[in-house]
Image (cartoon, rainbow, N blue to C red):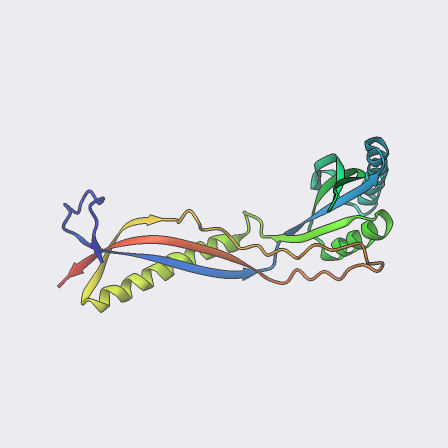
Length: 219
């Protein structure tokens, strides 16, 4: 419980209570991100890049075949560098490595499994993901906000009753800077599957937090 000097109507004499309201709502995710990495190690940078380029073209064909829209895929990085092995006698060149990374946005778990299976088996790809996401426009986010505000009001009411006061008007309502939705991601997958990988999206958490300051009416 505190006096709130920032309240223009308080004259620094209005007792207040500030609480944090929290809420967690579970919902099925709307989409997932999958990262596909193609890598090759050759004696020179040209052959390494040619290998990755050829498999990248094959990946484009695969994505087209699976019906993944071009707007849902993006090349996120291409790297070519000399790779070294560190030994007791110093560095030893292993050759040149080329790497290409593509991110793919998907909504169908079965399609994710097919993409993982075929890109690892046919293209020797490394897979990272899926990282599930709940869309910003999903109504569950607003529900979490409402629940957090209600939680804050209940806590403030309890504090007021604990000191023999009545809960007064709301003075301030702010969202903490660290209030972010929770999105869990599966670990990376290595090229070791032939059949479509079973993918279960499950339910994920949307969290919301709020700071609320109420006036207290003392009897």
